[in-house]
Amino acid sequence: MAKKNILCIGAGYVGGPTMAVIADKCPDYRVTVVDINQSRIDAWNSDKLPVFEPGLAEVVARCRNRNLFYSTDIPGEIKRADIIFVSVNTPTKTFGYGAGKAADLQFLEKTARSIVEYADSDKIVVEKSTLPVRTAQALSRVLHANTKGIHFQIVSNPEFLAEGTAIADLESPDRVLIGGMETPEGRKAMEEVSAIYENWVPKERIITTNIWSSELTKLVSNALLAQRVSSVNSISALCERTGADIDQVTAAAGRDKRIGARFLKAGLGFGGSCFKKDILNLVYLCEHYGLPEVAAYWEEVVKLNDYQAKRFVENMLGAMFNTVADKRIGVLGFAFKADTGDTRESPAIAVCRQLLEEHAELFIYDPKALENAKQDMIGYQKVHFCEDPYDALKGVHAIVVATDWQCFKDLDYQKIFDDMEKPAFIFDGRNLLDRKKLFEIGFNIYGIGKKPLTKF
Ligand code: NAD
Ligand code: UGA
Image 1: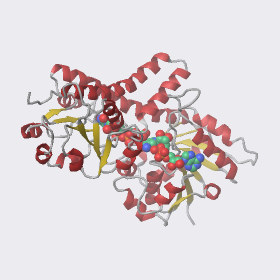
Image 2: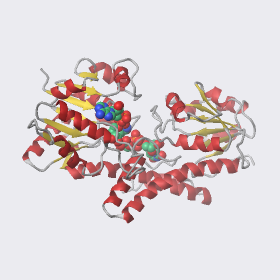
Image 3: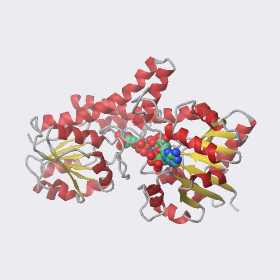
Image 4: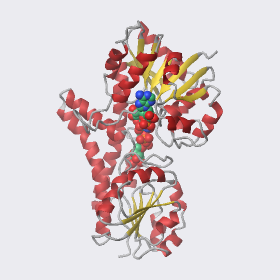
């Protein structure tokens, strides 16, 4: 008999890996992940997992069909569960009131309604999805509109994992945040959720707060991280005008412990499914609560991010004699960051689309994200997807580095240079490659926030 039955609704980037690690660390619990998407569940039950994350396949292999199950039996698993994590998607609303900023909570509400429909005993419902502050109130109202006399305790437990390092983040989190209602039942529910993490997370890293603080902390954490990236990217533009070097500036500024060295890497701008949507959600909330100045402050972080990708393409055009029409451009990387196949909101999308508007022809290579890239570029002509980096770069006029995959450093750039049109350009949108070495080979190399090294 399992000590507790844990259910997670939503088998995505968060639900899948998070529950795998919980199952791995808590062999006494029975952990099930359900989804309405049959093919996603089939993939979780196969050798080809729907999410690429270093270390994930090993964790799943250890636990699957032992105390970790992936299923589409949503009614049966809701009945069986003691604790239900809700990890459904909460994208930006694309229609109606609040379109373009507010969170679309339809998936959350549908999940709540399924819980009400199928539950036949009291349960703890855990908000794992990223949600606007005060969602727990609405959730509670939907859940308690049941006539079965069932009671639900709502706990907020936002997830802070980053893609590409999800397993390491889950196994050794900086903190686990648990927010609950300030009642005896609320505190008991928080303790039950805490007990899960205490199987492997030191207690001093488990923070408990009131439920509204927990909900808001998740949005604020992402906003602060994204703000750092936009701050550095804004300064990268100034570096390019003044001869300062962004990596030197951030390395020296980051030595101040109050600033810290991490998350100061200039690039094409932040991508990923969450930073933009969560900041826009924060902006919407500030507007909703009558704080237009606060809303405008945070909205600027997103605007600066869009500007960075636009600026990059403008720099390319300037360097390539103001035209890329009919020029072939090899694109190294399409994922929004290294070590993931995820392309959601990848800055590569904006860069590629702008280049196509300028009538360039693109040859895209990515070690993990090619299938998603094809979806993102549906409807565009003159774009090719290459399984091999050398195929993508053969005969091109310019190379764009769009993702910080470390394997791009190890390519044979002499061979690539020999096969390219001249003058040969590299636009390193991640400041990843060894620019001095490339310059010596003969490339004209442009980075972000750096003086270009050119032959003319
Ligand atoms: P995702 O789109 O990968 O997965 C969500 C899953 O929920 C999908 O498989 C979908 O089919 C399923 N779903 C939707 N409605 C359902 C329903 N009614 N019943 C059952 N299943 C349903 O999303 P994700 O990236 O895992 O993100 C989930 C949440 O976690 C979001 O709120 C996101 O902001 C947050 N988050 C994401 C990350 C990340 O790195 N991706 C990190 C931290 C937090
Ligand atoms: C981010 C947060 O780091 C997680 O804590 C959070 O849980 C998650 O969002 C979420 O809520 O979805 P993620 O988007 O997976 O994680 O990846 P990050 O490592 O944060 O990178 C985000 C983007 O910023 C990437 O495009 C990355 O290339 C870019 N970035 C990051 C920079 O341009 N410079 C940096 O210094 C750091």
